[in-house]
Length: 363
Image (tube, rainbow, N blue to C red):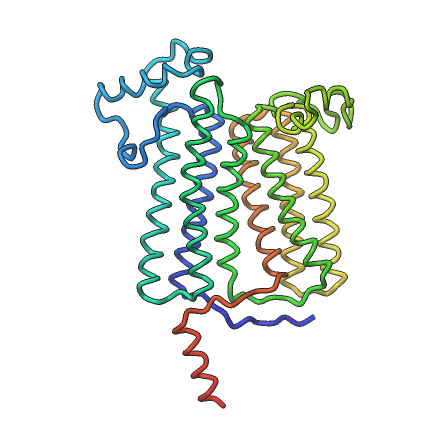
């Protein structure tokens, strides 16, 4: 089938800005992953959005920060006797993660205001970008909400709040990538192709949430066999559902959560292969076929990397590679879903008037 070109383009400067922000968000997700893997996320026990930008600069300030960490259960139960130098290592991970969040906020807001002042953004795009900004502000509050869960009664943050924090970050990232696609060629597609592309995107987010639960429960450090888990491909019901009420197992039972993560990986793998085959059979166009094939390949590689990470009991290098490839899978899923979906124009008023005048002149 032929492809239709939608005459809606983003100014080049806007594209570069959005692409830069998306890249910073991806980097921040990886830094957040390293912060979690090094058990550094609770090293800063206060939320100071402005003054917290500066790290401790004197011995007295370092001592004060270390004393604050000593008051929480993680220090008393896991890190008692930690030296100041050891504390500095975990502190720098968490401080870098928070600083990067502030950098992203400034890098988003200031150019956004400039583009608004210049009239470079259409009404639909402005609404979308204001929503993304609001989600970014919410993400800062969710980050502290997550950290607060580990400061009083736990030695780690709540896996539910961790999953919420990660998925919200990736939802913001996905919104940026989707917006960047404005003005690209859109192939003609059947309803089934559109549905399966959106299903792949939705299930990818479900899988990201489940992966965060696995990480939060340290569930990747147990049941380190494949394809069997707990001695069988499908564990016994007694082991999967022993907590009451039953639904708590979906979030709190390490065996159930890892099993969910595995089953969702198999589901994504099969659906991605079927979608790729369908795009070829439907002759949906080169872009759609290539997008589907690349997505299926990335999901296949991600599944293999996940198995290796599990079998080796989650070494940091493999875990971060698994998380980085998850961002690649999400990116490809967003691009494919947007490629096959209907699109609204994101023209600035000036660009729209210019095109209209051009059509009138040529007529």
